[in-house]
Amino acid sequence: MHNESRFFASMWSRAYMLLTFTALFWAGNAIVARAARELVPPVALAFWRWTIALAIILPFAWRHLRRDAPVIRANWKLLLVLGALGIGAFNTLLYTGLQETTALNAMLLQSGQPALILFLGAIFMGDSTALRQIVGAAIALAGVLWIIARGNLGILGTLNFNEGDLVIGLAVCLWAIYAVMLRHRPAIHPLSLFAVTLVVGIVGIAPFYALELGSDRYVVLQQESLLAIGYVSIFPSVLAYLFFNRGVELIGSAGTGMYMNTMPIIGAGLAIVFLGEHLRGFHAIGMALIVGGIRLAGRGSKPLAGAVVSSKTDNIERRDERE
Image 1 (cartoon, rainbow, N blue to C red):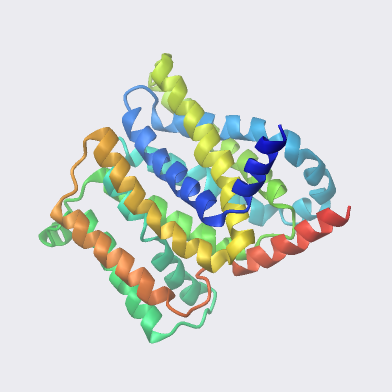
Image 2: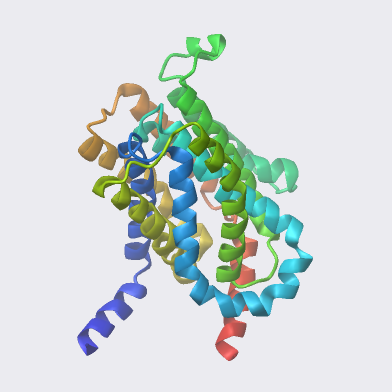
C-alpha cells in the first residue's frame, strides 16, 4: 500500500506525464464519438457525458458549492453564459459535426483555438498584441481554413463545404469565446465552477435531447455504446479536468497551453490507427501552418488565456488549505 501511495504521489508531481494523459483523453473524445456515431446520437452522447460527470464530481464539489453560494448567485448571468458555451454548446456541436466529418479533421480544426482566442482577446478585451502575434495567429487560422477547404481554395468561393467541418468550426468559435470570457469568472473554487457550469450545460442540452428522442434517434444499448458513454464521461471530462488543472499548478498556464498543442498530433495518430482514417497532403499542410503559427504567436508572450483564472484559482486553493 505504501509503495502504491508513493507511485501515485510521484505521478501527481509529473506535469508532462499528466498533460500527456490529458491530451490523450481529449483526443480520444473525438475518436470515440466518431467511432460510436451509429450507436449513440450526438446530443445523447453530450447529455449523458455531462450528467454522469456531474454525478461523479458533485460529492467532492458540494462543500465548495455551499461556501461559494453567495458569489454564485451574484454572478449567475456570467455563469449561465459560461455553462451554455463551454458545456452545453461546444461538445454537442463537436459530436454533431463528427456525424459528417472525420475525427482527424475535428482534431486539426480544434488546434486553431489558441489563435482565435488571441484575436478575440485583442478585439474584445483590449489585449495588447505584437505584430508577430497577429501574423502567427493569421497563419494558424489560414491552416484551419486550408483544412476546411480540404486543400482546394476554390471551395472557399463556392461555399461548398463539408457540413461537419462547418459545425465543428462553429464549435471552435464558441469555445474561443468561452475561453476569453473565462478570464472574468468569479472567485469560486474550481469544483464549484465545474459543477455549476455542468448543471447549466445539462439544462441547456435537455430540450435538444428531447427533440432528438422525438425524431426516434435513440442510444443503441449494447456494450460498445455503453463503453463509449463511460469513456467520455470519465476520461476527457473528470480525469482530464483534474490533470489539466494540476498541470497549470505545476508549470503554469503558458507552459500547459503550449504543451497541449500536442493534442492534434496525438489525435491524428489515434484516428489513423483506430479508425483507419488517412493523413492527406492538405492535413499535413494545415497542421504545419497551425503549429507554426501558434509557435510564432506564443514566442516570448504572455498566455493567450487563463492567466487571470490561474491566479484566482491559486488564491482560492491557498484559502482552502488554511481551512
